[in-house]
Amino acid sequence: MEIQKADIPSFELGRGEIERWRIALDEVGAVRFPGVATPGEVKAIQTAVDELSETFVSRDIRVVNGIPIRYGRHPDGSRYVQRFAFSSLYSDVLREFLHDPRFEPVRTLCGEGSRIGDREKDGVVINHYRNEPGSRYRQLGWHTDGLRDVFYGRLPGPMYNVGYYVDDSPVEKGALRFLPGSHRQGLFSMAFRKLYFLDTRPDPDEVVVEAQAGDLTIHDGRLWHRVALARCTGAASQRRTLYVPYLQGAYEPKDENSPTPFYHRLQFLAG
Image 1 (cartoon, helix red, strand yellow):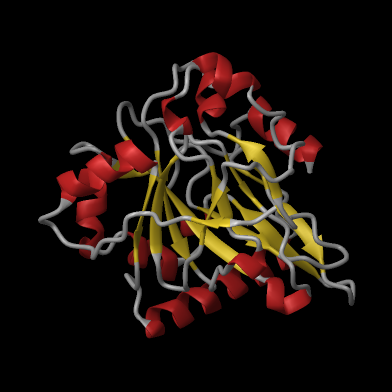
Image 2 (cartoon, rainbow, N blue to C red):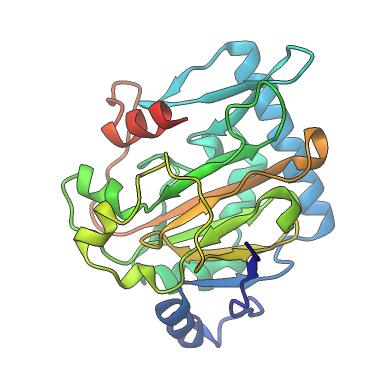
């Protein structure tokens, strides 16, 4: 099947175009901001992520505030983290970058009263995809994040997934795929259109979002989306992203006594 590359709206990160961003998000479901991190910042973030993985492995951290940490193994047997939760609590570099004033327009887009949920939901998540033996995060099947709100006892509303690219993400590495307009679907379609996480098949209507290290993308979490299997293998397939929760409403921090949500049990069973 021929892959459709997404011609998603692209903007410079500034304060004067927030309504244009919002209109684009409402229409398409995703926008892109190229090069929001400098090459020096990208290198510092890459180093911070590597150091975080080493710390988690050495301390054998399995769960943070109720959220499981997902590990993989390189072909030589060494372990590495493939899904972090609450990562900004463990890294000054990540926390200071994500709270930089330059991203105030992103917070405004997500809502005037929004805040970065360093200690809420899953915190700042790092996903680390690799296509190699021992990897437990080669791809991610079709899903919406709206179902998570249902499990939390809430009706899904607009939700913006703010992602920072740690590595380049061309189509050869799998990349993010989504179904345009599916963020406007009803609850039945959100629940039953596809088999959550288990369905990894291409969809004729999917588009792929390519990005470079240092880019920022925002997509509505109610979209049906997935990450495809990379065509390349090993280090060439490495694809890491930071996902930052911008939240509104009551402050709901998690701690070491927080239970693991059913949503995560479902995802890990599928993986």
